[in-house]
Figure: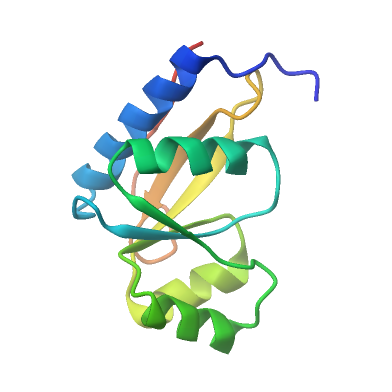
Length: 132
């Protein structure tokens, strides 16, 4: 990966921004946020930043089948889902969870933006970014 490294300062700002984005979309403080994402630096940053912003991260295997994901989301129970994949979005829609999709930053490794979508479709962008 030839992108610039993520700094501690940028990770802190990402954590603050994630909290603001999630709370502004109605996710309660200390809520359990499920994620079904591929491995990579953005997932590592999410593991570090989300708990610092006051939420609990519940990682899910993104290769689970639809019915398995529905069961996992109901069993947690999760308040929201972060994903970039179609099947987890469908599972979230089935259980009525707000969905957030991340878009990786092309300049900084590990940095990303969250896009909120209550029904799996973009209803407006709420960006979470941090400059490093």
